[in-house]
Image: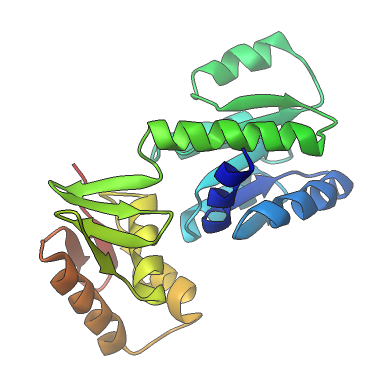
Length: 228
């Protein structure tokens, strides 16, 4: 199990919890295992973070102000059917559990949450992601991207990517076949506005490495990646 958990070091997680004491406690644990931890205080904030960052896994509290965990999950499932979602709650309300079934959740964790509970869930997440090809995505015939080693494999040969190229590709893969705005790309890669040619040249280099026309430019708006 410990060897498997090392995979999490290459993944990001979004944790939404309105109780600040619980939020701080669980966040400290998550930061031990994950590459990056995004924290939200309610469902609306969680949706905003999800849409503006590359997120691999979500842990959402059921009872939150503005937008609860169930409603947040429903919105996310409209654009991403497979991303692992875990719901936490202090209650064992059967109706809530029944509602959550349709959302294809990984787990429903009852509070208080122990470190041991999280470790077990992490192992389940890794197995789920592996079985659903979320650790490696098929871009085209004989062309794959690995979320673990951050490389593209083409005809069984590895293609190395730069750090910025990895961020760009994973942003597009977070919502495949949909527009990712230039503002979001610039924020995640360059931490702010950048010269148009800098972004355009990076995309050109990626396309050349892929030797495949699956990254599309939406003029003046951003980019999308086509995944069948």
